[in-house]
Image 1 (tube, rainbow, N blue to C red):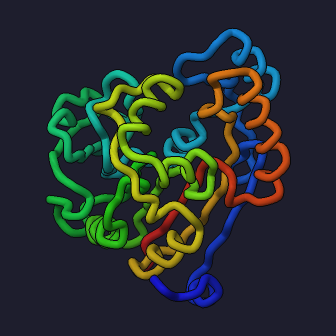
Image 2: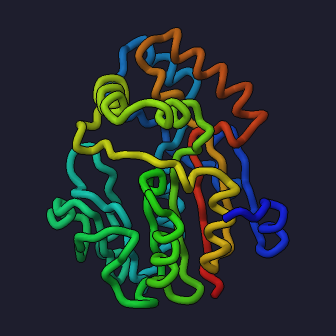
Image 3: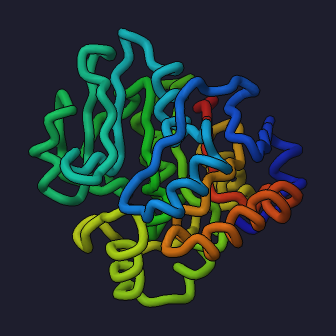
Length: 273
């Protein structure tokens, strides 16, 4: 954990892809822009003006590219699949699609072939039983990410794939989240964010949310990885046209010059040991 980034990169192949226009592996996505949650008419017009082809499904597209019909797939933090919780329609497209979550509502998730109650820190699953493991906006909630990554490596087959997306800890919304209490997160997101209710807002730690921590931890667990920094529309600043425009200016200037400031990280990691 205390190794320098240069030492880690000498031991493992790491490819960082940076893009301000939401391209994944240099391929454009054909989707129109998607707006999640409530938004005023004025901000909506600005959103469509500045981000007409933003693809909120970049991670889902990557996941669908990587799965095979014979794969056994595990989603960590699968949730109930209801309301504003993200879900993936993989049933019938893979051999088995299992989801695990600490919340017993995962047992109600209709998109899964198999659901289990449990935590990533101690997966109640057999060694080398999955071809692909993924999670989305879950890594920031790992209190002990190294333990979680070791468990993921344990249940993955040799050559198996880990995919996840998570906020960058240096994105302005993440920086605010790191210095404000949980009640503020619940209030802000439920009133000005994507419309999630308080039961869908969980404590965050941001211990696996920047290039160094990801590359070091995954290397220690026997993975090689690629990391992509993605810019997104300033959804957390949607409460007024002025704040939204400030976010657009930030994205078009500082984020383009400094990839670590961009909103999301998408990580593709292959188990090699």
